[in-house]
Length: 356
Image (tube, rainbow, N blue to C red; front, side, top):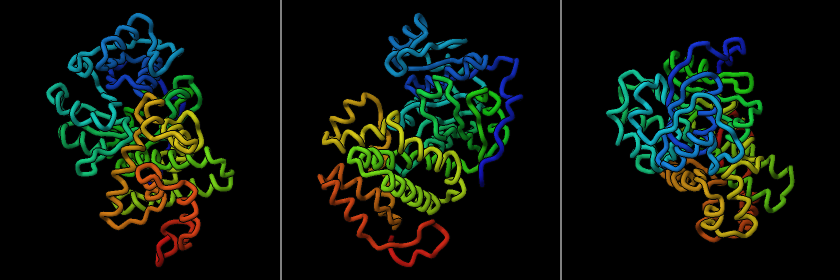
């Protein structure tokens, strides 16, 4: 289902203060805490590191992830998980995918029945190929679940640059409440019911941002970049629809919107990893230099395995895997892609008689 109309600007703020929780003190969690606090809400900001808590409390800054960004408003940093979620009407979870289930499982008792829990994490769990919303549904069966995703570079949100995002949830009340809490003059929130498609798009695009970083490092040209992005969109939508996503979701912010921004911006962590590898760095060194999680590295391995299991042809995924893990030549992989059998341009219009 296509995205629904975004919240009108006149309804972007409510006079009443709401208590919300943000779990995870990384860049995106910090950006969301900043938006919520500046919208007048009490933000219970949970993180593991006591030093981070002290710094935000005393200096109103998270220098590791957002140097030079002042955190204003009612932000209450804490290492006490129970304290963070106890009063929260809505809990936003920005925990890296590798730790996501363990953290939620350890604190199941702290969540209340009917509480709204929204995932901000773009990743996939290895065991069972589970998305973060599926983990929340399994671990918190009495919670009301949503997913926030879109072309949302954390640094730009923190700088109050114009941004739009998508809240996906089956429950219309979840969609409405998140729109009301987050919407402001620079941050617009659209709605979608295809939670699985929105979330899967957010995870898949990280793979193709690495591909685009490689292409940029090789100075392949703008025609080639456009070709790679559109073929990436075709490939990710073909894969997602085979797993039950709505193809129209990929025409919106969570699909093509998120893909474009992560494939063209040096602010994207996954793009930067691809660029470094394209310039000759080893993958481990590129990730270490980044200093933050690049979810696309882990997602690539899971998607390649899943695609092979269900028989979905994904040449860009396979090519990137060969480059990063099999020491394949980047130029050889590109030549192989260009010499592959040519097929339809847009997915779902012409029958796929031949492999791409």
